[in-house]
Amino acid sequence: MKRIVLLLHLMMSLSFFGQGFLHRDGQKIVDGKGNNVILRGLGIGGWMVQEGYMIQTQPFASPQYQIKQRIKDLVGEQGTKEFYASYIANGLTKRDVDSLKAWGFNSIRLPMHYNLYTPSIQEEKNGENTWIEEGFALTDKLLKWCADNKMYLILDLHAAPGGQGNDAAISDLDTTKPSLWESAENQKKMVALWKKLASRYRDSPWIGAYDIINEPNWNFTGTNKNGCDENSNGPLRDLMVAVTKAIREVDNNHIVVIEGNCWGGNYNGIFPLWDDNMVVSYHKYWNFNDKESLEKMLDTRTRYNVPIWVGESGENSNVWFRDAIKLMESHNIGWAFWPMKKIDNTAGVTSVTKIPEYDVILKYWKDGGEKPSPEFSKKALMKIADNYKMENVTVKPDVIDAMFRQVQSDDSKPYKKHIVPGRIAATEYDLGTNGVAYSDNDFVNYSSSGKPGEWNKGKSMRNDGVDILPCGDTGSNGFQVSFIEDKEWLQYTVQAGKEGNYSVAVRYSSPETEGRLRIELENGTASEYISLPSTAGKDKWKTAVLANIKLKAGKNKIKVVFEKGGFNLNYLDFK
Figure (cartoon, rainbow, N blue to C red):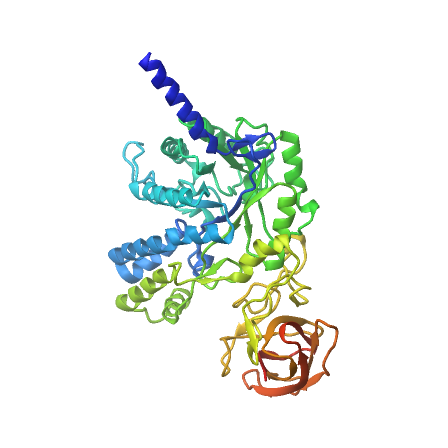
């Protein structure tokens, strides 16, 4: 009798425990209680797998193995180990995960490099699979932080054994060694790794899914090296089936996510599905945000009765972020944007600060010349690693606002509290989308849909269409609005201490042409236009005064309208 009671108690405990597992319910992802779940995630790109463009070593060192070789050449084996230990320790901490939760994310996609979990086939003996604790320990720690925040962790094999794609920066492909597709041993290692991961995490309800292979891009029979013209994709399907089978031998709880060839877009020959708990992933970059852009995804979802997830998206303007998320969520499609940390990152939730010493290293790697000393190089690299700490990165409130608040509201919001009398930096205009908080002629990248792709010529401070550059003028916040075009405008919310007429000192530079601007108030009144004569240089600044701007006591919304552009704007000083 006691055995029966214990068995019933165990079964009830397991049933209760299993309520937290995400799973497929027809075309939806649901939790254990059947509630629809829209995954709102961020990919922790660059942490376990460095891509050259994210640390500005591309094109002279794009895959991670090349980056490591360059670092080793400067600081030696031990110095390289110390750098990567610091880089990994600082690159993702509990504070990062707590921040993501506070900003609105409910999930994290972890791009994994296999070599943190298991040695390469070249290092193994007799075809064995041995294990490295580092990767598992890092994943355990991240999983705990996610669980503490009630966030789902999606495991993504970003760099598979041997490399799964000809886009080497993504897969860390070393062409001097057999790729994943050219080596049965590499494929066996990938299958074994997933079985090991599934065995370790099978009882973890905060593991959201296993994204078993990231962006394969390989020509099996076609001529396109990235597999975009493949019609069968037989080797990819066979490997994903084998991985799923191995996972199911130890874990029936978790979703298996699959990705097609051609960076996840070519599913020719992949269907029909072979498991009841699967999700199909697409990646969405730089295309229009209309229903037609989702047509392939929606057709897949309906035809095969399977949930769709956009496992990667981003690297665009705030307008694109807002519109893409609104579109995807209106069709019940979850998403994971990319990435979290990148050096000098405009189009992300944070930016890692580059230091001048790192530029010296980059210049040497690019052009050669005098080699930086080991002492200089190590100090610079360790400082860069330190800059990856959450407390040292620059958080981008405009990006976060676009991804969450602006998806729900068309209203603008003050960037910060502006009190007048007082000085307002030109770059600190309101938060909001184009046509609401600002108006700029170029504000989004639709290059995948055949339109010009530049949305911001400055790529500094903020990720709107407004073009911002660093500013060296006295009294600036470090940045200026530049590349101003005719009829563009910026809106500021200001708090006036009392009602009255204010004069506004406009700090500007104009290399060649004469600019013109005026101020419009929310009650419809407007000032006269003021002329901004040429200052004969982009770094030569002058002040023009606009008088008799009548503000009410309390909150005022004002627009600075550029009748004629061609100048740079530093600040507005209300007196």
